[in-house]
Picture 1 (cartoon, rainbow, N blue to C red):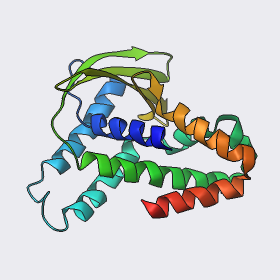
Picture 2: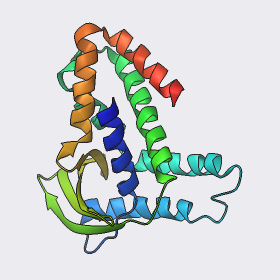
Picture 3: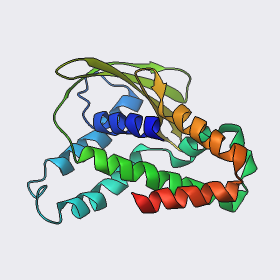
Length: 198
């Protein structure tokens, strides 16, 4: 899972660092959520003893508003989604969300003001959009594309592509490998352990 971990690190660092120009509905939604995260990070109590717990409590609902947990889960499992029964799917969505959210919180605590340039928003269909950005560090530019879906009257992120590497695709590869040798129940056991370990 090292590759996934590295991608997640970059993904969650840049997620909330965007500076926006003109924005359509998907970008405006993302901008709203990012602004809320930045407000939490700018809290003067950030370095207080209990700052991490306070931020976790504040950031969790923002994360929920930003990401489509079910869409992320379906796309990460792909055809394996159908191997899970209803209760297993519900638990998978919950565990996968916890895994990503924990990674997200870990990453945003290392916010360092990298410059991010927003390039454009592309509508791929009536309900699918891609928001293209570049993260500019002291040594390079990193292209980061956010894929969003419109469901239940709201735009949410369902994938992030960093330097042409998809977060969802990487997890899909990992889950495929696990399910070749293990049952859905065993996959859930593995995820439970990963969530506990973080």
